[in-house]
Image 1 (tube, helix red, strand yellow):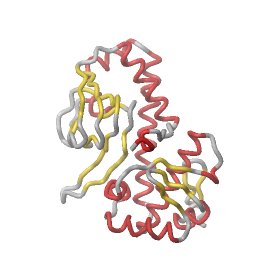
Image 2 (cartoon, rainbow, N blue to C red):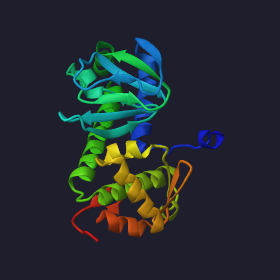
Image 3 (cartoon, rainbow, N blue to C red):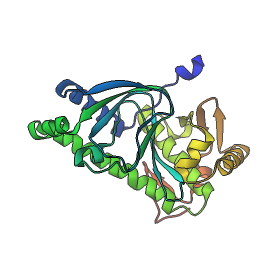
Length: 248
């Protein structure tokens, strides 16, 4: 357990911007409440009325969508420093996603009227908020690309691993040849991200390891053969974005 606690998850630029915004929010806004939340607790559910924005101070939360048939698709894994329910909290529309804690944590809640007061009175805050909304939209489009433009579960999982590897390289400023991804998600949770089943994801990870594309030690995935992984993903990656016009 101690070794896992020592792992440091990389922070993409978007999350760093979000953390900076949260610092200003705490200094300027009146926090309505702070609450300890256990793993498995739902902060809000899809379709519920929204009255403000949550700040995830500690822990992680799964942000998901569900179909009428009850199938769940995990849109993202929110980390400490993220704002949750932002668009619904600002517009007073029902939450369009569900936020469930996947580990014990701490959350703060900021009422919509307080948030809007900051937007009206502080221009730098507004600019940072727009950047954050743009980051969220980009992340949504990346996930849509992952799901809609991949023809197989192997493709989807390979694209996800390459994306995680790129984020790790960007955050740690290391070479792409030694990408190490901190990942303590279960196969069930990864399956929800790529829109597949746990059995399929477990089988694919086993195949990737046998082909020496990756190794998985404790909660760290090492990308051993990026070129081969990209070939499975059937696209060339430029930064964090795949270039689908030139398939390998």
